[in-house]
Amino acid sequence: MEENNFKFTTSVVGVPLFFVLFLWFVYWLEIRFGFDFEDNGILPRTVSGLQGVIFSPFIHSNIEHLYNNSIPLLVLLAALFFFYSKEAWRIVIFGILLSGSITWLIGRENYHIGASGLIYVLVSFIFFKGIQTQYYRLVALSLTVVVLYGGMVWYVFPKIDDTISWEGHLSGLISGLILTFFFKKLEFKKVIKYDWEHPDYNPAEDKFMQRFDENGNFVNLPKPVIDEEVSVEINPFFLSDLNVVYDFIENKKVVINEKNESKPES
Image: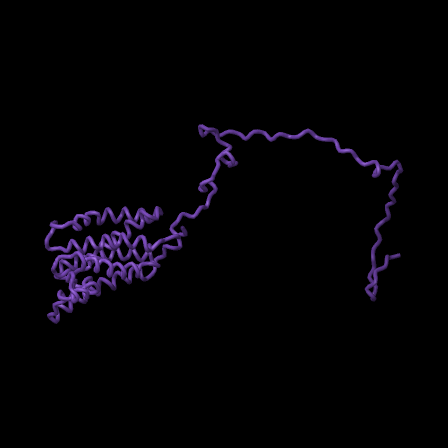
C-alpha cells in the first residue's frame, strides 16, 4: 500500500469539530427555546418513529449524555477521515441509516436518541476493517480502538443499564461490521517491493543468500570454473610471407586560402 493514501487534510479536524459543535448547537436550541426533540427520536416499529433514523443521532437527553458522546466522536471521526478519507462520508451516512433502521426493528417501545449508535458504528468499522486489511498501520489503529473503547462492548447486552439504548449500541456494532464488507480497500493490499516477498521466492537462487550457509554463517562463493583455453585455428587465407614496408612522411602545415581550399604549405 502507498503511504500517500494517509494524508492529513482539513477534514480530519474540521469534520469532527463541526459535527460535535452541531450536536451542542441542537442541545442549546432545546435549552434556549424550550424545545423537546425527544419525540423526534426512533420509536420502534411505528411510521412516525422512522424520522428518528435520521434525527436521533443529533438529539441528547442531558448535558452528561452529550458530553459522553462528544469525546469519542471527535477521536473516532478524526481517525476515520485520516485513514479512510475516501469512504469516510459514506460510512458516516450509511452507518447512521443502517444502525437506525436496525434499532427501529429490534428496539424497545421507547424513544431511542443519541449519537452512541454512530460511535459503535465507527468503533466496529475501524476495528474489523483493520483486522481484515492486515495492514500494519490499520491493525495498530484497531488495537488502539480496543484499548480505548473495548469496554463499550458490555453495553450491547440487555439489562446492563436500563437507562441506555443497548439496542442502538448493538445495531451500531452490527452495522459497522456489515459496512466493512461493502467498502473494500484493495489499495491496502501489501505492495511487493523485494524479491523475497514473492510467494515463489527461492533463497537458493538469491546471490545474497548464497553467501550464507544453513547455519547463517558467512561463506565465500565457490570459484567460478574456467574452461580450458581452446586454440583457435587461423585461416591460411589471411597469412602472408611478404614483408610490409612503411614510409613515414613528415607532417606538413596546411594553409587555408581565401577560397576555403586547403593546400599544403611549400
